[in-house]
Amino acid sequence: MATLPEKIELQVVTPERHILSEDVDSLEMPGKDGYLGILPGHAPLITELGVGILTYRKGSETRYLTVMYGFAEVLPDRVIVLAEISERAEEIDVARAAAALERAKSDTPKAGSTEADWDVVNAAIERATARLQAATRAGSGSGAAGAASASTRAPQYTAA
Image 1 (tube, rainbow, N blue to C red):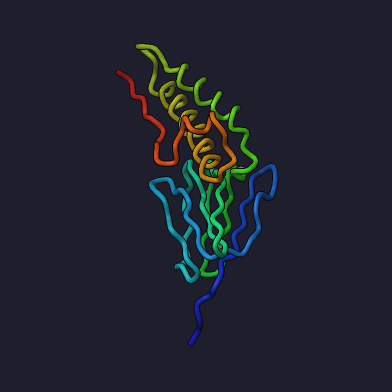
Image 2: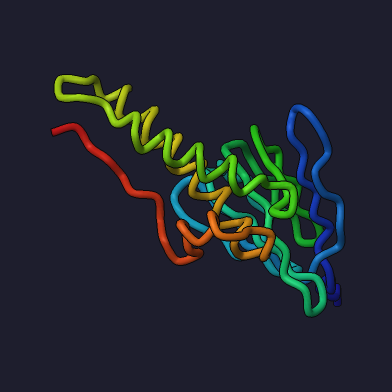
């Protein structure tokens, strides 16, 4: 009888660089339609990724990184994330991320704007919020990170 793997080999890659290669106990990643929890022995699947925080556990440590769009292949003993954009929480410049969020919020389209205009603003807010939340959870943030607590979600603006 085959035994279940005890760890998952997690690989996170972007077009620019290899972000992560570690053996982890579990992970949670942002799928296009919600978060997926992955444990060793998970059934194989391929999924589209959304914008959010990939959380992984290694022993008693929990670590975070942002993932923005892309795909993931899940196998019983390995997860490969091919993300358009990703960064480790400790690499995030909190002040810059907070400024990006404020800039995105102030760029709210005016009346008569197209749906595409609203989509661009919502995507920018979602990306900036994910970056601030990851930095806050990892404890790499200071004062400015408090503006986006880990429990808040990016506001969604819609055309009137």
